[in-house]
Image (cartoon, rainbow, N blue to C red; front, side, top):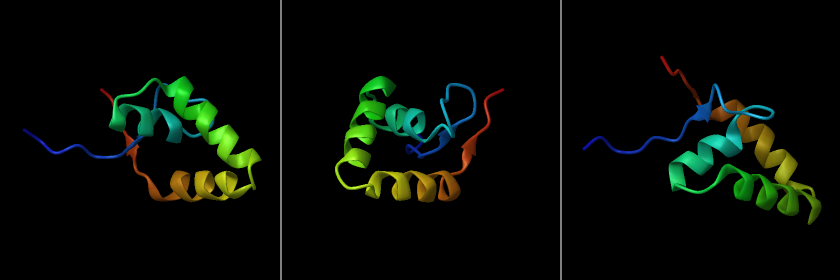
Length: 64
């Protein structure tokens, strides 16, 4: 079995596909991941910085 890899989604995305990629990686609904990310961002603003960093670092999953 091939190991899981963390990718940004190229198709099912709102902004950059980071939350969708994380949701696919941990088998969770993307809406829950997005809501948690918003709460994390509102709790101090670090979520915005981490989102931008993740959008830069995570490769895009090309779906054919």
